[in-house]
Image (cartoon, rainbow, N blue to C red):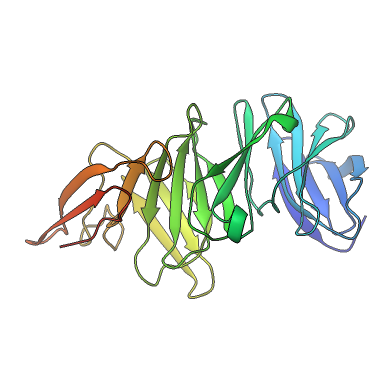
Length: 272
């Protein structure tokens, strides 16, 4: 089936993994037996980029690599009933599965930079592209535990994240601190307001964020319950890209210093 594993997912009883031989394998965890295989069609020399399990419909979704811009859907039971759809750009390493939809960011710049595809599970041809970030690659899209929001990670400097509401595509964009570049992975623990974020190689960091999206987001830089930088110093929320912004944030850094940030008409907030 190949000489290396490219990506894997699990439903708790089985592993679903992709190989560089362009196969998807279903492996029973209890005895590590391969119970189903599928070599994806129309991949040519490309590789499978990401794989995810969908508990809603018992599907497995997979994306191709960098030259074939496909998303594939298989029945998890036997990896049969293959269906696929060509996307506008090359999908990322991490795709998000939420009720009704699969989200895949594009590893593209230019026309498709900063773009996320929102793909209906049962009719993949009905996908839409959402402009949600800078002119930059997306390194992944990650679902909140509730399934109500997804976060797109951007390979920008400093690193950026966009929180997208599934119901209406409303967005909030967040910037990390200087030197925290190219957001690569996101893990939630204990709800949407507690996150671990990695930045990729330049330099590599793991950033812990707490109270990121609460009613009173944590801004302190000197307490044990908050991350070690102002978060988010630059923040705006908008209904559509380029929308009007009217947010004013006033917060403390945990000592006696106060800061304020304002973002109007698409400009980023700054710390004063």
